[in-house]
Length: 239
Image (tube, rainbow, N blue to C red):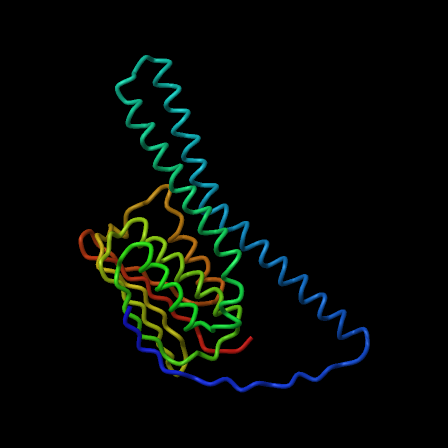
C-alpha cells in the first residue's frame, strides 16, 4: 500500500472539572443520546445488509418449493446455488458488522479520519489482494460524528469493491479544501450501469443516506468495464 499522509500534531487540552449535579446529569444525557444513535446505526446497517440478504434467501427458497410442486426440477439447482451464494454473502456481511461493532468506534477518536481510512485500506488489501493507493491530507477540522459517517461511507464503498468489483487497484483520496472536505474512493474494476435499477443491492442507497445526513453530496460514476468512482463532499464546519 502506498501512502501519502502528511503528519499532524494534536494539542492536548485540559478539561476543567465542574462541580454540581448539572454537569454529571448532562454527561449522562449525552451518553444516552450517543448510545441511542449507535443503536439506530446498527439497526440501520443490519436492515440494509443482513436483513435484506435473508429476505432474498426467503424468496429464493419459496421459489424452490413452487418449482418442486410443479415438478419443474430443471431450474432447482440454479436457484439453490443462488440461495447458497446469498447465504455466504449474509455470513460475510454479519462478520463485517460484528467486526465493525468491536473496532470502528475508537477509530474516529483515537486514529482520526486519516488513520481510520488507512486502516480500512489495509483491510481491503489483506482480503482481496488489491493495491490501495492513498493520498490523504492533514486531519480535517470536522466534528467526530462527521468523521465517523465518512468512515462508514468509505467502508461501504470498499465493501462493494471487495464483493463486486474484481479490482486490482483502488485509489482513496482525502482533500481538505477551503470550504469543504472531499473523499474519493475509485477502483479499476468491472464497473456497472449506474443508471440501472439494482434490486437487492442496498449499499449505494445506504451511502447516499449517510451523505444526506451530513448535508453533503455523493456522486457515483461507473460504467461496465470502466471501474467505479464514489465521491463525497461535506462542508467544513464544527458542530
